[in-house]
Amino acid sequence: MTMPSPQPTRPSDLVRIEARALLELAIRLDGPMAAPFARATDLVIQATSGQTATGGNKLILLGIGKSGMIARKIAATLRSTGTPAHFLHPAEALHGDLGMIASGDLVLALSSSGETEELLALLPTLHRMGNLIVSLCGESASTLAQASTVFLDASVTAEACALNLAPTASTTVMLALGDALALEVSRRRGFDASAFGELHPGGRLGRRLARARDLMHSGDALPQVAPTTPMPQVIHEMSHKKLGMTTVLEPSTEPGAPRLAPETWEASPPASREAPPRKLLGMISDGDLRRLLERDGPDALAHTAADIMNPHPVTIAPDAFAAEALELMEARKITSLIVTSPTGAALGVLHLHDLWTSAKP
Image 1 (cartoon, rainbow, N blue to C red):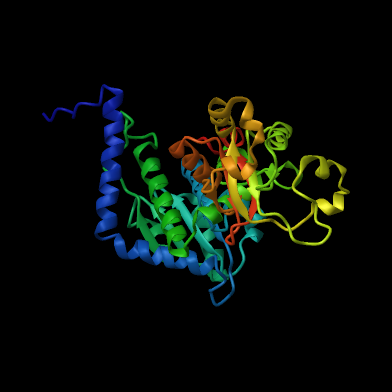
Image 2: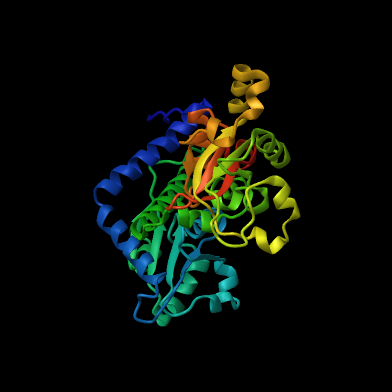
């Protein structure tokens, strides 16, 4: 009499079953699945780039039950990484929502058994419309797998469930396979952090991917003095703008441009404040002022901005990400970054407080 194999008794054993299923998937991707996976990637890129003969432009994902839930998540990953993808419930498709699918669209069908009735009922129509099908399926001999243009093997040796019934390891493998497909398509397309940021403008992730130009203090909020500005006016400017620093800018030579003095800015009409950016000559921080006062005492106010400015302040480009700016500030132990143009003009200032809420993961 054959004794039944012992069932996992610890949660860690259940996780190891799923981990082994993922390892087996990775081995298949390096071996017999390498060519089908590459073909599936090509089909996704062609279908979502309008490169098919019938001009399709999106990817439709189908699935029922747990496979349907995984299909929804894969569709979301595809969209967030730059690939137009939509989930369609097979039962709804049978009752009118099939109109979502156009000729030339690619269909990605998920089914562990490959015999899901609602999916199989759609096959004649999909073939008639000329839609190619990529299946994520656990049975290579199933109806769905045999009817597919490309079959991706999502089989598992066993589910983590003690009864070997509840979809556990199989859904984990499907999800991992779908993520791999989405990310490979993204990599092939050259989808980068900049493009990712464009698709994620909201939430903490969107703030981390904001650009320096979107967060900087500019225009009237930019502290600025001239090299010849006396220290009392330098202190006034720093206190007025409340950033703990001021830029030192090259004086403007344009007729009618406002002088770099605080009392002049307050008196200037709004239109005169829209002067072109000026070249950055240096920066003065609160620390520079403290060191000056400690060194010169009452004579400190006799100096000009040029006497104490740092002529080589740390700067950053306007297209840099908020996370990059925060990393630079923390590495250099500074609280402000000056945003400059390629020609060295001061465009604005980033403050550490602005980035703490924007760029922290």
